[in-house]
Amino acid sequence: MEPITVKNQDMSRYLEIGRTCACGSLRRASRLITKVYDNFLQPSGLKITQFIMLMSVKILGPITITKLAQKLLMDRTTCTRNLKNLQGKNLINFEQSEDRRMKKIVLTDQGNEILEQSIPLWEKAQNFLLDKVGENQMARLVKDLSRTVSIVRKK
Amino acid sequence: MEPITVKNQDMSRYLEIGRTCACGSLRRASRLITKVYDNFLQPSGLKITQFIMLMSVKILGPITITKLAQKLLMDRTTCTRNLKNLQGKNLINFEQSEDRRMKKIVLTDQGNEILEQSIPLWEKAQNFLLDKVGENQMARLVKDLSRTVSIVRKK
DNA sequence: CTTTATTGCGTGCATATACACCTTTTAATC
DNA sequence: GATTAAAAGGTGTATATGCACGCAATAAAG
Image 1 (cartoon, each protein chain N blue to C red):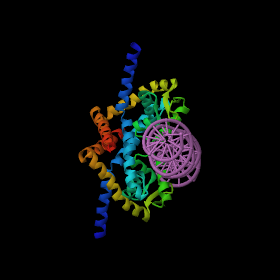
Image 2 (image 1 turned 90 degrees about the vertical axis):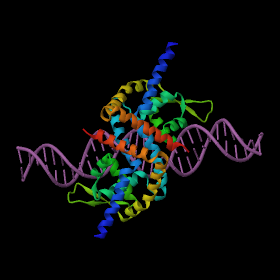
Image 3 (image 1 turned 135 degrees about the horizontal axis):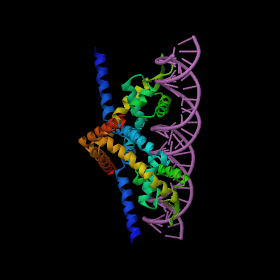
Image 4 (image 1 turned 90 degrees about the horizontal axis):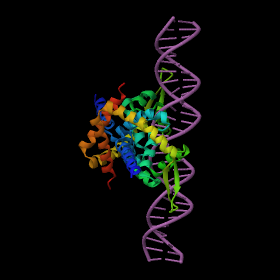
């Protein structure tokens, strides 16, 4: 019987890892929730990532790629390519700056328009979750995520 | 003054969306935490996604692609391609089943070995987070994520 | 036993993500 | 002012992600 016992012990260790891995939980949830938002946003032609980037540019005004990437905790080169997609859809554009190393990202008129149109769709997704998960639960989750990020980023 | 007032009102609306979007929070956190685990796992040659998939195959035994994808809340075709990478590294393989539609995923010997070797690296990452975030905080986050996923998945 | 539905899987396409490495431009140092 | 350091950005490569569509094998319906 011993081999079986040993095997079972090992298995419970693996199960424990599977249950407790913070990254696994995050990525699983991220995939699921992303799909929810993407589905609701579909009529706008935007995915939630694109919506978030447009919204960020709207809020942070003309901003450089590097700084936007920092705000979104995204690799700069990821940001570059995501922005290129948005430029291809005519939703953002790049302004040449005085400092010729950098360019400033700005929303186009069409970008503003699409963003405005997609906000109600975002609200539908958000409310769908609020209804299901509960307002308190959801607020706590968002807050905990934000706090976790702050702590982990601290050097 | 009115145009400015209106403009500011709109801006606070955008800010509110940016702060409260569950998907934005999740994806930001997911990017950051993924990087933490990927860094710790680097000596193993695995990324956290691959580690999780190997671990899942270890736990769920010989399992079909579709069922593994369901467990991981991952699109089946994503699962297929991720598995193809792992097969390329000789970490998993496919067994032909009686039902010739399906194949069963199994760990190779090398897959078992690499998984075993990478567990201490995963533990380093997990402990790094536990230290920073705190045990209770982290447990709550993982639990909340799991609960959220359960609720959202319910039809 | 044929027809139809379902199940499991693969591929093409597009987006998202990040690392390594490189170029260009500005800032700092001497 | 020349040299060096730092900052901003781009490209190549690789992995991760999911949708639309199609194929083959099995199960269900008639």
